[in-house]
Length: 248
Ligand code: IPE
Ligand code: IPE
Ligand code: MG
View (cartoon, rainbow, N blue to C red):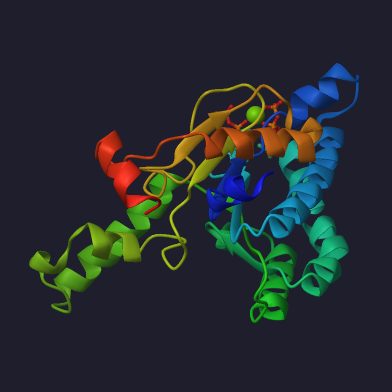
């Protein structure tokens, strides 16, 4: 990328890592082989984010709807989460990655919850890339949790209805301490959000590509970044305002 492209690098990239199952099927392999190959793609993209000085990467690893999958696939996936975490955590830590999980982790087996907590503890003071992994996450769940908190606080008298505005609502949502997502990437050919960060992506640039996640590499990521650099983000305004103000 050129120097000027770097000026319009996203601060926060979110990715729906889709297409693992189809990647495996094309090769006559079981679906879990696709998920395993997907971990390798994630490792590469984490490295690319750090290299490009992208501050935050949030990836969708397991949606609140993915429990609908056959039990064997779900249990293989949970095992893969644990083994990948154990395998990758030292390198992530060495590379100064700050690792966090979002979603309702209470639904997971104790062993996975323990690995998640340990990884969080180990990397909490790291000041490099912030990597958020969404597991048992749903955008509707996120909004519902925030609404429940508001209802409870109003009921107890700690909060007045008048205090509830968009800023307050946003402060209760996952990732509220981070810049809003600039670039959304979905691999695997589907053009849908599948209940990912519904609130947070209100003004995010949406990039869809047909490449299956295990095939998504540095050059595919570079294409997405170039596409992002070419977007004009108006946030409800008009072109002339963007030209005068530069980047928000
Ligand atoms: C995404 O790949 C990974 C998870 C949902 C865990 P898929 O497993 O959805 O792959 P396809 O869409 O069936 O190819
Ligand atoms: C979205 O992919 C969830 C993840 C990538 C973790 P899905 O494959 O579950 O989404 P749908 O079912 O095609 O919408
Ligand atoms: Mg899929």
